[in-house]
Image (cartoon, rainbow, N blue to C red):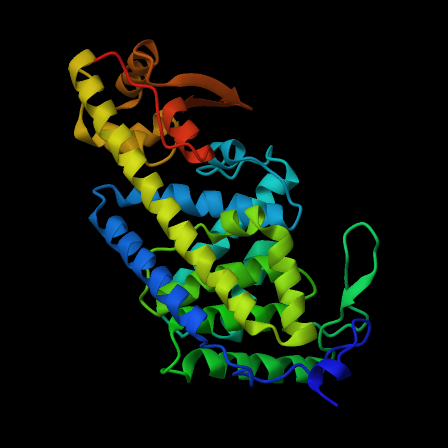
Amino acid sequence: MTTFDAWRADKPYNGLPTLPPKEDIETKSVLKQCIKARAALAELKQAAELIPNQGMLINTLPIMEARASSEIENIVTTTDKLFQYMRTESQTADPATKEAMRYRSALFLGVQSLDNKPLCTKTAQLVCSEIKGRDMDIRKITGTALRADGSGRIIYTPPEGEQIIREKLADWERFIHDNPNLDPLIIMAVAHYQFEAIHPFPDGNGRTGRILNSLMLIEKELLGLPILYLSRYIIEHKADYYRLLLEVTEKGNWEEWVMYILAGVEDTAKWTIAKIEAIKKLAEHTRLYIQTALPTVYSHELVSLLFEQPYTRITNLEDAGIAKRQTASRYLQSLIEAGVLNEIRVGRDKLFIHPKLMELLSGNNNEFSRYPI
């Protein structure tokens, strides 16, 4: 009897095979796609290193990933809302927005943790706890089962029993760190399946697993910043994501699963490079416009601040040392009159939105309307 014959959707999968898989995970097709994905990632890493304003990447792309990864779990908010609350602990945000904001915090907390220890079970626990806003421990309760949307039919029951789950996670850790001959992207794809199949926490496993992908890319030095917006690709191909996860369990269909992840990495890296280039062009165009239209307001630091995220507050200018409050307010008012910013109120906060930047960040289109220079 094979492992797949022994697997049943409604029974705890305590027989989840150890890693590496017995099936061939380095087929010719996989290796060809791996080369393409690695090339795209290398180009993205270089683009990120060469951009003058690193704050733009750190503040914007993780927010977009947080929104998309949360949406996969049916926690729906908007990029706009996330940027509104990014620099405040405002209690007026709705629950979905707060939870997506915690995803971003968890991503950065995970990156920081890599300075102290390699990717491991404790990393996953740290990340999941931050996402959920409470301490998350390995599942101890029985009866966990994943069900199909709509029908409620059980499609998968993860391993059960704390000791078994910890053993599976220890094997997952060894696979990540003890296979130097495997390409890191193949390791990431296989490890992502395994983590989701182990399903170690009562909640938050999907989002935790997607953050671990980003952390793995940083740990393996394929990226310097957590800026691979992979959840966008998963949303666009969500049915395939869940179908292929299940096919690994049911049939050992590793090749298609690994190909899916590699294609997602390539597509996402190219998309992100194009987005970075579009934002750089808009930043240069905006700089020239402000310099010409508002020479007494213009400074390099002010334009850089306007591109760190789409919403600006008077206090942001003060904190950056650009101007004191009264002058900062006058600068922002001048930018409104020039058509660079719009003013809105969120609760008691007065925010100044940069509509061209928001449009670039929230859409797939990389074109923008130009200022009258």
